[in-house]
Image (cartoon, rainbow, N blue to C red; front, side, top):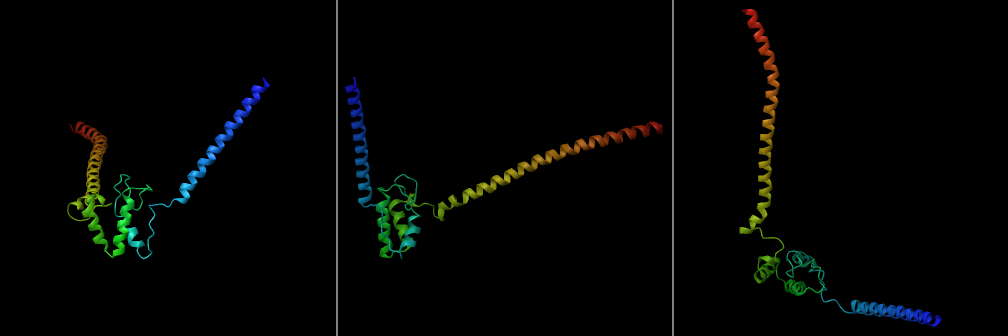
Length: 180
């Protein structure tokens, strides 16, 4: 009986020891790949181009489906943002202006690439509509509230005048009776 217990104890120790080794190997392997493999998404940007690069990368949407801008795309190995950043940086280095770069990418990908619509033509409605809607709704609410308060004031006046009218009616009736 003791032999079986000792064998079970030894086999448990061996299982635990092998599990620890497996975890250790896994951690070593993952740290090797994380630390030693270079990141493809990192682009070294010259300091003189950095302000323009940051400004422009915030103006374009990432079309991978993440819903972020090119600057803030959360995917490390994004199939759209990485080549886009490289192409954007190359165009900045060539000396193209901000407008030229924006026009190039809009021509290549369409209006959907812009993080905000332009303030020209039909897109102007996208800028004006929210503010106009807020103003119109505010005016309608004011008009409705004015009607409600006016109706309430009329009701209050009628209640006040009823008491006064009754008092004067009684006085008038009394005087007419005395007069006759």
